[in-house]
Length: 104
Length: 312
Image (cartoon, rainbow over all chains, first blue to last red; front, top):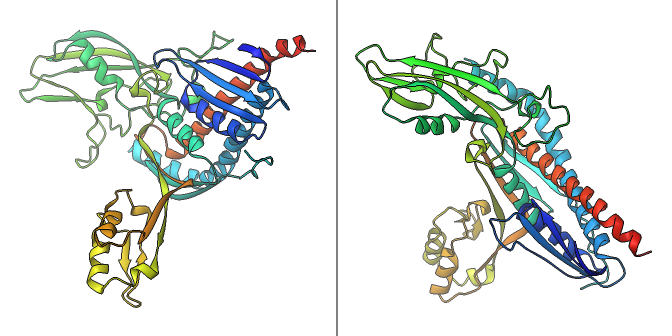
C-alpha cells in the first residue's frame, strides 16, 4: 500500500489482473462515499495491479475496498447457488452420458 | 453522484441448453464486469489435467522429441477428479502425500508394411488412476466402432520406426499453458433490446418492409403474415452488425428501430473439450473466483490492520 492519507490510497496488488480488478472497481464506483476510483496495470508482463480509491471522508479507502470486495463475493455466491442446484438436477443424467461416451 | 446507493440486484441464472460438451445459460441482473470475470476465469484459471513431462526412451519417428511432447501435452484428459490433485505451484503443508502425477506410458512399433497411426488411444493408463484417460479413449483390443473417435493423431510410423515414452500428467491452469484450458471456447453475448418505431414503420410500403427485414444477415425480424406488421422474430440472432440501421437510414427513416445491448443480461455459451462436463467448468469457475476474492480480502485485512492501529 502507498499512503498519503487514509482517504486517498493506492493499493498495489500482486498476482491479480483485470479478472478481479474490473468487478471490484465497478462495485467501488457504486459506493456513494467513493469520490474517485480506478485501476491500472502498468505493464502486462508484470503481474502488478494499482487500484486507486479516494473517498469523501465518511469511510476510509480501506473500508471502501473491503465493502466492494464483499459486494463482488455476494454476487458470486448468488450466481453460485442457482448454478449449483440447476446443474445438479441434470448432473446425474449428464454424468451417465459422459461415462457412456468415454468408456465404450 | 447520488446520495443513496442503488438497490442491490440479485443475479439470476437460467439454463437453456445443457449437455456434457455444450452449455448455454442466461445470466441476468449483474454487471458486464462480473460476467467478463466469469468468462476470463473459465478460460484461464479453471484447473484441469494435462501431460506436462515426457521422458522419451526411443524415438525413431519423423518427428523430433519436443514436437511429440508438445502434441502429447495438448491431448485433453478427462479431468473430473482434478480437485483431488495438487498443482505444481500450489502451496500445500502436507507435502508427503500430495497427489500429483499421473503416469502414462506408450510403446508403439510399426512392424507391418502399412503406415501406422499413433494416436491417443495408444497411451497406456496409470494403474492407480484408471478413470483418468484421454477424452474419447478407445484402447486397442476393444471392439472398434469405425465411426467412433479414432483418437488424437500424434505421429505416423513407417516399418521399423519405434516410439517408446513415459508421459506424466499434472494439474495446471490455462494461464500457464493453453493445454490446461478446459473449454474450447466460452462466449457471452449482450442480449439486445430492440424497439421498433411502428409509427415510422407504417409509413413504409409492403415491399420496403420486406426489403428491410431481409437486409439483416441473420433472421432477427419478420413480417407477421396475419397483421402485416414487422416484428421481432429472434432478438438473440442479432449480431450487432448495423445492417438494419443502415438500411433504415437509406430509406430516409432514421430512428425506425433502436437496438441497444442490455448491460445487465448476458447469454453465455460454454463449449467444453470433453475434459470436464460443462456444469463442472462453470461451477469451478465460480469457486475459483470466490477463492481469489477471499485471498484478496484476507490480505487486505492483514495489510490494513497495522495501519488502523497507527491511526488510533
